[in-house]
Image (cartoon, rainbow, N blue to C red):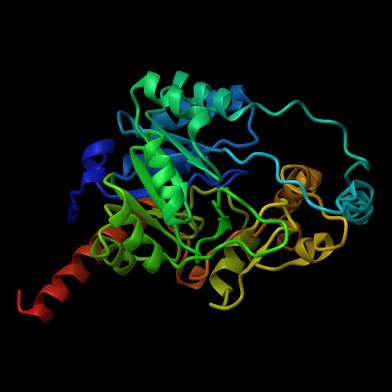
Length: 363
């Protein structure tokens, strides 16, 4: 297989400049994380919402698959995001018939107090994680833990100003998340009465590369080797894959979600606050329509409110009631296949693209 050595591969100790996005809520299984790392990329767990015991167990299991290859843990740093006019009773009323349809109790029983980002990171490090990654805010709350453990800190941003903030705070790698990306927008500030910035990947990556002196990773709309080659051409040192790895056989993604990804149109995804209280890009469905009502709450209350519904829907294969996070290029995902095959196809495709461009230029 071709190799593409960059500052990122040297810093993280990986063979290929490809990172798995830390997608919380089920997709980043130990099998997927371990497979990506074993294939030469960086497997990253999305551990938000997990217990510290579950994090320790998941990292331990992934380590057994990955061997000596690096493994990362990703946490979400966002503070609470209030929502004017929030009405918890109205949200509960909307969810009641969905719970009945899925055979769930209403109201749902109270869950345990969520672990803090720092507690989650420490649990991952104790189990052998070698990289810390953050999203949705300034990584300062966990930067000290990464520094004390002597591991690299990766921070996701959505603007140039945010990139400067995280580098000043000690981030070793910046992930520049373009507006095309699926899942939660990583904006540090979420205005109540205005859309969040959606700077496109090409525009954002090039400006972030020029603004900071650490390796930059491109994220958003990158679905094949040509996208990796394009990111490298912009000055990035690698790419982060979310949607592209949702169809990996090892991913914890129900068939209905996979099918919707492959059938998605380029103009179909939407950015909504209805599911979690923070803006996130995904495919529209019944759950979004039901929750996109007056009274919707902010983060993290809205996210927690329908958590039992989303989990039960995933177990039942009900794509209409799941969070169908996906980026704008979802239709390029292709068939289900092992994660190792996806990584190798990315790297070889990038090498082939670079060679073709060399021929065009006469090189």
